[in-house]
Image 1 (cartoon, rainbow, N blue to C red):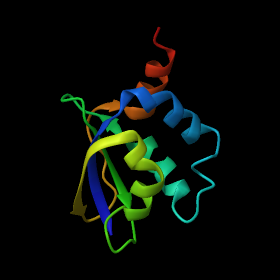
Image 2 (cartoon, rainbow, N blue to C red):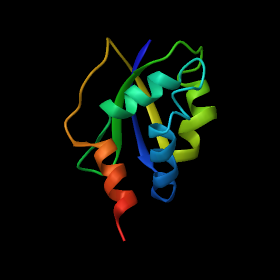
Image 3 (cartoon, rainbow, N blue to C red):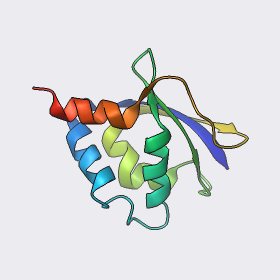
Image 4 (cartoon, rainbow, N blue to C red):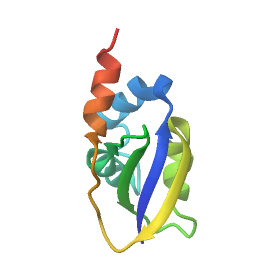
Length: 105
């Protein structure tokens, strides 16, 4: 199924999350690592400070494996909503935001 996800980034984990997204750590995770990386590339930071993205997941409980292995470490208030397919959302690139967060003094 496809889902729209909204969540709040735990900013204190931003540097670690960006490193794992870009160094292959998450991409190598079976079976969903590359989908997580691709989803974060689609993700945007919205005007209210939340992060929104679309993702496909085949778990009986939406994003069960993704949450257990990645998302619950880096996000709070994660909500899922069934959608028809991948969607793009308006907002600032989440990956760019993470990079700026890491580079901030």
